[in-house]
Length: 445
Ligand SMILES: [Fe+2]
Image 1 (cartoon, rainbow, N blue to C red):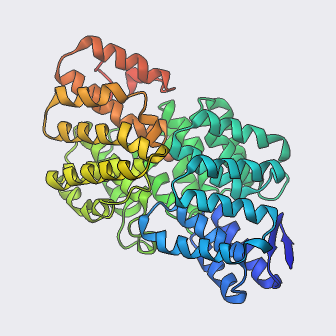
Image 2: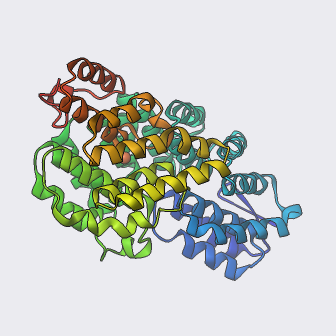
C-alpha cells in the first residue's frame, strides 16, 4: 500500500509511518539535528516501511564515515527484501543508495537526476545531487543541475527557501556571484533559519573579500541556528575567515573553541567525528599559522578527529585535512601510514573516488608533509602538477584556497617571483577578487 505525502510515494500501510518518514526528510532538508529520530520512529511504527530505511541509508552515506557502513548495509538489505513492492521513486533512491555504498558516484548521480526529471521539486534528491556533485568538485554540473530545476519553483511554494539556498550555492561555486547573492538573500528572507542559504551568501562575501559585511551577515543570522546540525560549525568557520581577514586573532580563537569545535556542544556530542569538523578545524588552524599567528597546543587536541580518518576513504577532502592535523601535530609516521592506507584503497577502488585518492590526495598529502618538514622544492614538486586537479577532492574554492596559500608561501620562500606572478593570476581566475588586499596574499605579489 502506498501513502503519498508531499510528493513522496511511500510504501507502507501506516499513515503515521509515512508522516514520520516525511518529517525525517524535512529535518534533513532543513539541516536539523533530528532526521534519524524521525526515521527510526517510522521504522518502529512500521518495520516494513522501506523508504524510511532507504532515506536513513542515504543520510548516513552523506555523513561520510566508514563507521556507518554496517547500518548502511542493513538499510540495503531491507530494500532488497521488499524490492518488488517499491514504487519508481523508491526504486531510484534505492539505486542511488546501492551505488553510493560501492563508491559508484556516477551511478548515484544518474539516479538523482532521473528522480528530479520526474519530481523536479524533490528537495531530498536536489540536496543529495548537490552534495555528491560538490564532493566531486563538479561546480559547473552542480550549477547546471540547479538551473534545470529553476522553472519548477516559485518563491511562494512551501520549501522554496531550501531550493533557492541550493541554487545560490551552486551559482556561487560556478562563479555567478551576483545571482548567488541575490538568490541566497531571497532564500534567507523566506526562511531566516536557512543556514545553507546564509552560507551561500557568505561564500560570495569571501570570494569578494567583503569581511566586514561577512561578520555582520553571519552574526545577524546565527541566532536562528540553534536547532541546526553540524553545518553551523562550518558557518562559524566562515565567520572566522572574515575575522582572520581583519586580523582579529582573539575573535578567531574564541570562536574556534566555542563554536567551530566545542567538545561540550550538543552538535559535537551528537557527531564527535563529523567530517566537516575535521575540515574546518585543520583548515582554520593552518590558515592562522600561514597568517603568522601562533596556534599553541590546539593541533594536538584535534588528533583523535584525525585518527578517526586513518583508514576511512569515504571523503577525499576530509582525508587531506586529517592528514594536515597529523602532520602539524608532529605525528609524521602516522601521516605516512595514512598515505599508505590511501594507496591500498586505490588498489581496491578503480572508480572516481579511488582515482581521486591516487591522482590528487596522495600527492597533496606528500606536499603537506614536505611543507611541514620545510622542504619547499618538494612541496611544489607535488602540488604544482595537480593544482588544477585539486577540485576533484571536492570542497569549495574558499576551502581549496588553503592549498594555493601553501603554494604561494612556498614560492615566496624560494623567492620565485615568476611563479608568484603566475599563481596570482591563477587564483584570480577562480573568482577571488581584491587579491592585493587579502591578508594571505597582500604584499606577496
Ligand atoms: Fe563553505
